[in-house]
Image (cartoon, rainbow over all chains, first blue to last red; front, top):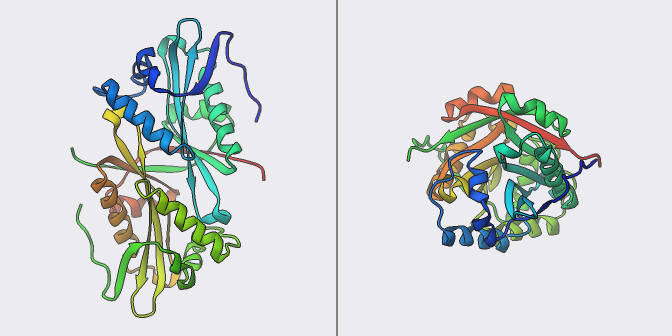
Amino acid sequence: MSQPQLPEGYTIRRMEAADYDKGVLDTLATLTTVGEISKNDFIEQINYWNQNKAIYNPTVIIIEETQEIVGTGMVFIEKKLIHNCGKIGHIEDISIKKSQQGKKLGLFLINYLTDIAQKNNCYKVILDCSQENIKFYEKCGYNKDCFSMAYRFKL
Amino acid sequence: MSQPQLPEGYTIRRMEAADYDKGVLDTLATLTTVGEISKNDFIEQINYWNQNKAIYNPTVIIIEETQEIVGTGMVFIEKKLIHNCGKIGHIEDISIKKSQQGKKLGLFLINYLTDIAQKNNCYKVILDCSQENIKFYEKCGYNKDCFSMAYRFKL
């Protein structure tokens, strides 16, 4: 798929333990509740994802000069039986810092994660979004597919 | 969550290699294209899932007397950062053999997979469905949440 460019001075790469001090949780908080995550919790999470590298691809966009993380996203790769033991990618937890929106970072991030899924031989990638984000994902080449249902446990 | 009963003589358990000869792929074919999967392919897939047991929970409903598999479903557990390093369950590839529909096997299966997610401390479970299946999933305690978008790669 065609790839828009990142602005100069921005890089995209896999999330790593040192990102804790580069504002990764602040960026994620643009999306939803993050909670109190200690540096140890964060490192454990990164280690868990790294132990399952064939599945989890946590990704960040970072400004090189300031080493500030301004975007996050995940694609994980699910191995199925259907479609000849096919694989699909699930895109989750896309977040772009409010002050950085309007620079097409989200579009770049979605294309990048979709490319990871393609390189992993997935036959499709899916993601959930609200009504107001459908247009954005259509610009990324996605089509409305079906409905997402949720069961939330009482905590 | 409340659990309906399986009919007498039916059991639910994790999918295993020997299920290849018990009609598991025929049951899956109720859902979608399965393709030509050899016994070796199948065993490799089961091994892969078993090597990643904390993530993948492939599940079957089987009739004890005939050892025929009549239902399949998966819940996989995703570890996130958001919601205090929270986990969510993804239910995928629910299939009940046509001749066995109307016995509430689907309802049982969904509740069973949802319980697996709860025991794994997930804060929610999500699944995708078509418009005509929304009512069924509402009976299982699920609510319409958002839209699912898909990007299909040209093969």
